[in-house]
Length: 208
Image (tube, rainbow, N blue to C red):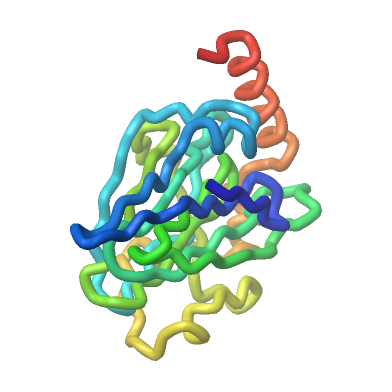
């Protein structure tokens, strides 16, 4: 498995080998050894989420309070989507920047989104499935979002599909990046760095 660190610290793209044959295809989208080598600690699995989306559905941009935050390891077992990670950590050198990775059921690439980063995607085909391996369970009071159509972010939804966007009411009403900053909703970069260091220490103390 190949790992590629994105320019946003805490976001890593993983590309597994695929093995097609006359029966179909085999792939391992998550491999712990490669993950630990790239990230520096194991992925604590507290919850596995599964979503099915029609073409044009946008989910996000979502994030959770830090600490503890919620890291996500995501891949697309059916269909195709454009996955977007946004740096929402106040004080980060890449604050407000985003990067995108195309995930699909051909190459089974995966994306790790560390605690404090914003995450969203748009489905490019009908019946697109997203699988999320989450480091913490769903905690409604600690879950937040920012407007996926905030012009200050200028996320690339319209660049990859001409489908009419479909959003939840919650995402439609999410604050802009500037409003989230003013409301003190966003994670602080130093808190996130402290959380990452704590996870690495825990792994060194108990690697198994």
